[in-house]
Image 1 (tube, rainbow, N blue to C red):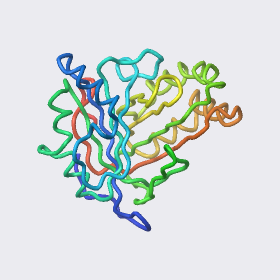
Image 2: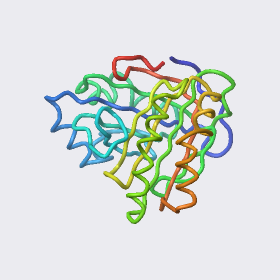
Image 3: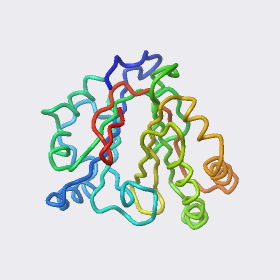
Image 4: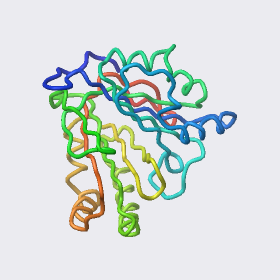
Length: 239
């Protein structure tokens, strides 16, 4: 899927977010683990990169406590579309990641709704709500150590409801650190499908419980309008 970027507005109007995930080949596992250790410094030359996180995942890209030995994620914020394109292009820094992966996907997108922050950084709203086509959601949180056990007790029902949600093209769990710094990245057919899931069932119950229980020391809830979706995950295209 490729289309023109959504109409931008306001301060930071050209900002573009890139989310990608990679299932690293067994022959490159050591290289992959070193990316986690090095963080942003392991991304190489990246013009216009404002913010970046190298992320791990649960087994099979899921949301459980057992970490995956092969799946890595990238969340990057670029000052403009040209910088994002240069990073993700066939001769850009991301090629090293793709070449070492069994499969991967990459989504370029603009923010149309954002609440909260990530490591103190906030995202600029640069697009309007899509009237049709796919949308993307990212929910991330730094979980208070004292509330971790209660948070993870809610996770299995919420994960099962996400797997069964109509209109969900992709769902992957990623994080900066086991147990305490977690995120969920999802791609939906449209806004209606995403809203149906967000406002019902185990997910809604978990959100209400987290708010009442003060589970998070920091959180961010973002919705995006994607304009370029490439690759596949678990053998299926998400475009």
